[in-house]
Amino acid sequence: MPAHRKPTALKLLHGNRKSAINQNEPRFGGAPKCPEWLHPLAKREWKRVMTEFRDTGLVTAADQAALASYCQSYARWRQAEEQIESEGQLIREPIVTRSGNVSGYRTKKHPAVTVAKDERAAMLTAGRLFGMTPASRSSIHAPEPEQPIEDDDDDDIFVH
Image 1 (spheres, rainbow, N blue to C red):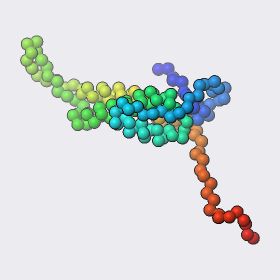
Image 2 (image 1 turned 90 degrees about the vertical axis):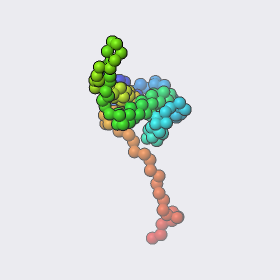
Image 3 (image 1 turned 45 degrees about the vertical axis):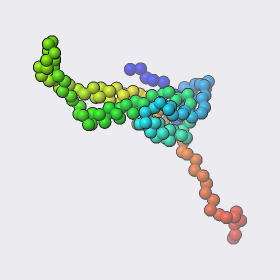
Image 4 (image 1 turned 180 degrees about the horizontal axis):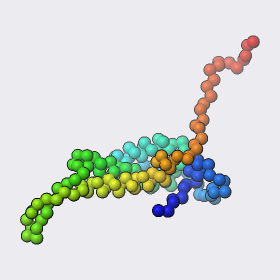
């Protein structure tokens, strides 16, 4: 599987060589807006991850579709996992003869198991684009957020 290119924002956080940075990369602004059509679970995940991304400068309005894809895959993965939890990983499927009679049953994997597997893979792939896995952020060196300086003195006159 070929290595995916890192976004410049992640390269900068990783501390890559200046020569490896595309100085002419287009810069996009604005924050992405949560699409109305997202599943309610996806909307909750959108809100959660956008809280994390707020001050990173990593996610812009141009990333809306990629982030929506991540969130929708997250919601579908959760739904499939809930269905597996309530119905089990295996189902009984009837064996039907040519005449249409049921001659017995066979056990097979619940279709939700495949959905969960596929959506988890899609979610993790999309999440890696944004540095949302431990491996993808293991070498990120994010700057410390600036802390406001507290001045507890009422005046600036020093008395000796």
